[in-house]
Length: 310
Image: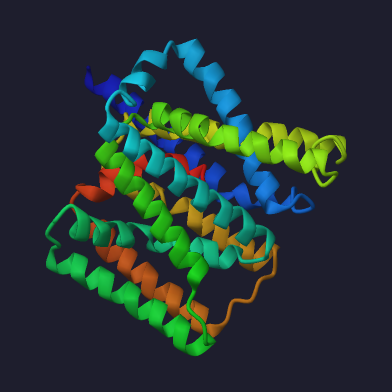
């Protein structure tokens, strides 16, 4: 590829990646628009309509053989099943937290996620941490302890999101499933349970589908598009730009979520929050400037579906 063509492709990659992370950053606005629907039902519709949308995409791309190859051995099946459960948990916690007015804490979870991924790599993949990675991890631990001591409770939402997102990335890394094929398999596995739950709630008279406003119906159906489209943008960006650049752009999403939580939804943001986030931003700078793209880069590719996941 000529130099000008390579430069053009990199610019396209930046735009694709930025579009994906902007979309994930503004996702709380979407779930807030559905706050009249119980969180379990939002999750069930998100899974069901994502599966429908992804099936159409996979058919258009003739991607089913690649998806079945990712599910061809018992080992791969176990990892895909585990990643499906993990992303389902991550999605539920995020949707519930957004509609329970904890957007600031959800942003904290995705700020510290890369650091959690480092720790998971050390524990499960026996990866060796550099001195500066230890420094970054220590700073994040200090920030979490500060929030816990000053506010009297552990920021469990942030930690749960970071842990589930990190575990999802770890599982996807070890399953070697391509991002879109993997997400399709995960939603296909979860969708029978989700659809059964929707039908049960509908027959009991507690379902939102069929009784809510036309706008709510449209938002529920479109949740599949909202979930999968940023993933496609992310995949297009990830193929065109270095992982280091992708790792830097990923902080757009939690930064936007933080701004939404503080300035749009008017959630509390105390001096303790400010100090804790400042410490985490310092850890991010240390991590971004010194890390090597081992788990961090690969997890970003695998975990991208969770971002839409967010």
